[in-house]
Length: 562
Image (cartoon, rainbow, N blue to C red; front, side, top):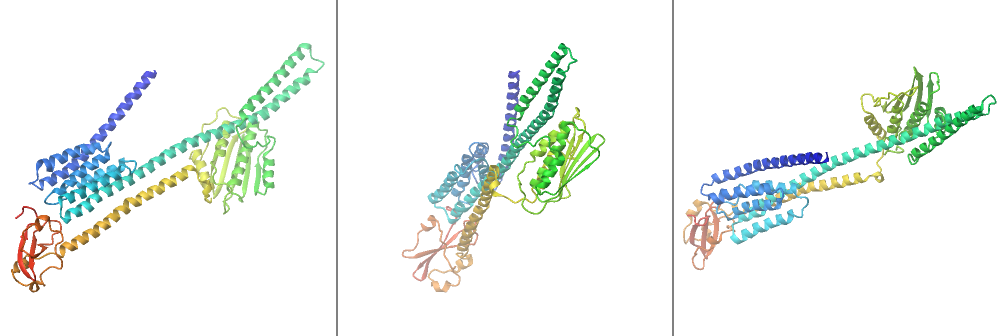
């Protein structure tokens, strides 16, 4: 039987694992299809690109990086980043279609990495590779701008977004875990309250039943002395009295075991009546009114004690959670049933005596009422609170399974009671539990990550925008129009072209431009031929000998270009 159960569990676990693996594979294929589609469109737009370097190798890298990101997300990001870094060696433009793949894999790195330790060195390594390539290849300013802004932005922003997403999911998951734990704990506490109430019922039974048995033993002892009895009758009565005495002793021992440690609060004497209880509470300064209606029958001890406990618990809750309010107690006996109603008036403004109650007294009270076949209803009432218990005059054996709750469960009514009790409470920091402190800590961490996820990209975006604006200004103010270039004449003085020469020279000529031969002793200046900021354009070189133009050349923007 055990072997079969283990086999069934193993089969179910294998099916679940297989289903999860299949789901991961489907999602990976879909993601690869989308990212590969972007790469294919980029390749088709550049027909002169190599098929192997431009399409085959990138698709194979994506096919390895996407599923590999589940176990090694950092390695996957580094592989896709290598595809983007290849653009730095392109003679056309550094940008390519794999920036989208890099952003997606960076986001997955943030969601799948528990901390920042694995990710930060990898991101720093990617940046070092980009800057190293730019330095080795001696690329133009546009490539430096791409390496220092677009690539880091594509790496950092999705990663921070993924970290924020992971933190939020962890917060939600932890909240549900805490809720389930509290639910189990609340069930345990409620069960403890029921057990304590049953111990109290057992104590009441000892007080009442033990008293009756003692009377039986006393009467048996009196009959034993009767002169009209035979010797056998006296012997039987002596055995009866001894049996009753033994029963009383056994009952006392059993109840003593049940009561030992069952409750920490002192038990009020069982001989105290409801009238005496109310009078004692009124004597302490509480505004309480007792009203009894109907004839007073001789109730069984359990029912009489239940009436007392309903009034006692209701008065205790009213005094504890609504100090200063008026309390009305009404006991109505009619038709073989006793109804106990305790209502307190709306709460008086001010600090409550105890705002952290758990409603366990109501749980125990429900247990007592149900055990004798009664019903209990507890709910807010006209700004205050109302408890109504209906008890039979005789203990019923067909006890209902649940209490009457006016269309809601007793637990819901107890929760409503606690909400009503805590409406005017003042927060006490000393009452914070460990869960409250942990929740506050997690929320602070989540807010910090949220601020970082949006603040860091905003800072990077600001730096990027300022850098782009500066670069655009430099490139736009060093443009010599082709018509003005054509109008320049060798040997003409510089002053004659002061109106057409740009304010600034082009500061970023490539090495092959600088290596072009120039007239001996001449100073050469470079100017861009148009204001296109994203493409490499032809560059005009003007060489001045003193104040006169010694040479002018058109240098192609791309090496090997015409």
